[in-house]
Amino acid sequence: MLSAAIQRVSADRDAARAFCASHEITLDGAGTAAPAVVTSLADAPFPQPLVELLLSQPGFTAPSAVQGAAWPAAVAGRDVLAVAKTGSGKTLGYLLPALARWHAVRGKLLSSGPRHPYCLVMAPTRELAIQINEQALLFWRRTALLFGAPLGARSVVVYGGAPKVVQAGHLSRGADIVVATPAAVPRAWRADRMRGQNRSSHTCEQADRMLDMGFEKDIRALVAAIPAVGRQTLLFTATWPKAVQRLLDVSSAAGRVRVTVGSGGEKLTANPSVEQRVAVLGHPRDKWEAFLQLVEPFRKGGGEAATRVIVFCNTKKDVNGIGEHLYNDGFSVDTCSGDRTQRERERVIQSFRDGAVTMVIATDVAARGLDIQGIDRVINYDYPPGEGGSDDYIHRIGRTGRAGAKGRADTLFTHKDGRHAPELAAPSVARSPPRSAPPRL
Image (cartoon, rainbow, N blue to C red; front, top):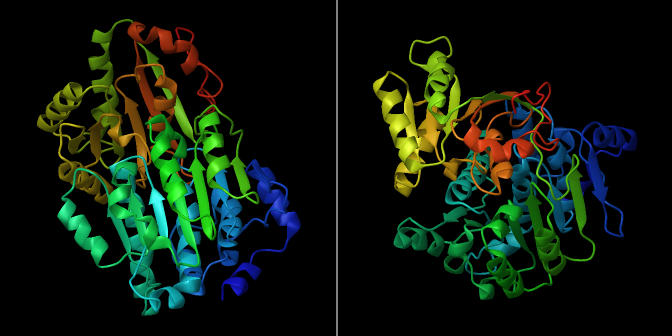
């Protein structure tokens, strides 16, 4: 079944070359031929129910660049490194191949005794882990609704800050896909559970972020614990720093495929689908009036009341103060920061996703990985602090302009942010047309 699915991949090399050229895709087969890219959903190398489900999704008309380039190699069992910008569809770039490969051997796995994990997905934050698990469950449920029977893979998410007894109960009932934060992996994953399985898949999403957060030793320990024979490693990242290169060398096989979308490299680049606007203000006290003018159209009854907006602040104090002010002033708003419990943050994100609230005031806890359709506007009340400010800025504005959509980001920039002016005007950041650096910047 799997080989038949792989054979459906488009053989039109001219179309594949045009697809790679138009999306700035570079494929490196690391000494072996890289599989052909997928240029249409109908040619996706997945079980037929999954292909038909993809074709039925409104607004999903073609694979994204990273999906089209990574799917064939991942389904063929190759190790894959994929470097692509934020909002490029990386989650489905590895999740659907994992489901397809599990489906191909599920009969053997389910009949061989206790149900042990086949695929582990590591994500740097709880919010992203929850979101990835929701994607896995979504495809499980929708195949059941459309075709009378699901693909059958059970997915479980494990992370800190939630009741361990509940998560242990979910794991004890068996799981095929486990999504976990690095700190929770020891609870979710034991190397002896993988022994005896024919294949196992290990995926890191936002590998660069996990290394930035100090999880390199945790990832290396996990890689060492999973037998190399039959192990498949997929690393998906927005940048390609030296630390990710070192991790790839110890975790992947010689026949790996590297997929690069865009310029790639060590430097994170802004999504060109996001229109960036920077208001250069003389003094921090000028921010409040400028901010109120920006958000005025989004109040209940306003001309853009249905627009989904994320406002980023650097401190929990500002998040709480701005959220309270706007709520009392008639905005559909909630807050998301470290002052809220994990359950409260999950509720806020779900309400935002469902449209129950249209504006969220947040710290950087919401800046990475969250993929909520229809976010039209990002407002930076504060420019991110510290040496990594430009990277955090790019991840913030990357919450809009996702999956081929257009977006807009407004940033309030004062003289206290002056040391960040060169990085904000740098080509890797100021690449969204038609923005050019304001003269005052």
